Amino acid sequence: MDIGEYMALCLGHPEYGYYMTRDPFGAGGDFTTAPEISQLFGEMIGVWAADMWIKMGSPPSFVLLECGPGRGTLMADILRATGHVPGFHEAAEICLLEMSPTLRNAQVRQLGRYAVTHIDDISQVKAGVPVILVANEFLDALPIRQIEHKNGKWWERKIGLSDTGGLEVGISDAENLILETVPAAILREKNDGIFETSPYLNQFLKFVDNLLIKQSGAALFADYGHVRSAMGETLQAVRAHKFESVFENPGENDVTAHVDFENIARIAKGDGVVCHGPVTQRSFLRELGIEVRAERLLRDAEMSQSDSIRIGLERLIDTKHMGSLFKVICLCSDPQLTPEGFNESL
Ligand code: SAH
Image 1 (tube, rainbow, N blue to C red):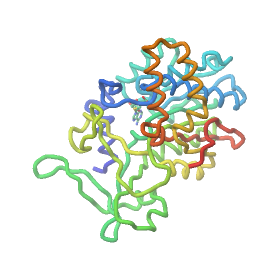
Image 2: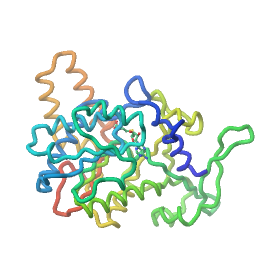
Image 3: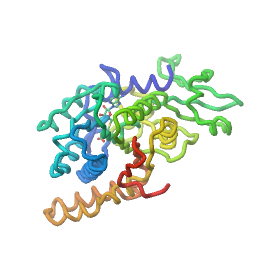
Image 4: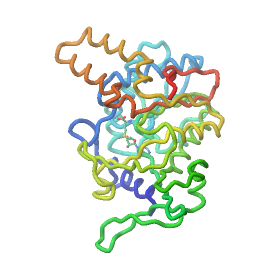
């Protein structure tokens, strides 16, 4: 099978898939994400979303969509931060795209005070109203495929069983269909090595772009990844905060790949959607006022909380931590809309 099929099974197999039966987040789990590190992250995304809604003319009804909400922490922080924005909560229909039954339960528990709708697929978003979409560390979980240039030819990496019953990587001819998803410059340069491409992610983004065009609105994606499309292998597996082999213990570790932000921009351009960024997470959060908010929290905090506020802030924006590896990108249907947070040029 191709690497994408394998990755989809590792994460989403109904019985054995990594996300399907567990809550992997937090210090005692396998990995930690920005909303789990500090409430400041979700609060800034809330400020961004409320500002966007006001710039869109405060529509009386809109879908507030989160893709891959994990424990529901980001959405809870967004809703708390926007509680005082007149009309925002009344207008928002909260919709969560989530494949894991376990995490859906966690989200319902976390968001108990609010009415939420779960969907399995982006095509199920309510029609006819504007959409504000947010997603943190969602795109990195979408299955990628790997093509490889060697001996003057493009191949695709595939996974099969070895003679001893383990998993083994082999290659087969790369089909035209997969080569069509690779940027022309990469194909032209013909450098030896691996290139990661994701027909699944491309299709998802095309759907988002068309949704924004049809219903108007904006989408914000935060994730780790690179600003330019480039050769290289980034597929990784993490368990208990440590890297593992992607091909051992399938379903027991979090398999992800770095996001190619240039690819997101390229698809947006083709679809006629305006793309802002990518910018670093550091720059985005600072422009939205994360330091001012942290100062405010510190003023009221007890000694014991102050350290965790400071450490949380540092982990989110310091370049040694998530500040520069993580990027934020925004897609907008309307060229007149200028989202906050995108002044950095990378
Ligand atoms: N946004 C959260 C969780 C990130 S982990 C946070 O920042 O903490 C990835 C999330 O996406 C999980 O909730 C996982 O179950 C969900 N997910 C992954 N692939 C998905 C898919 N193909 N369809 C729907 N949800 C998916």
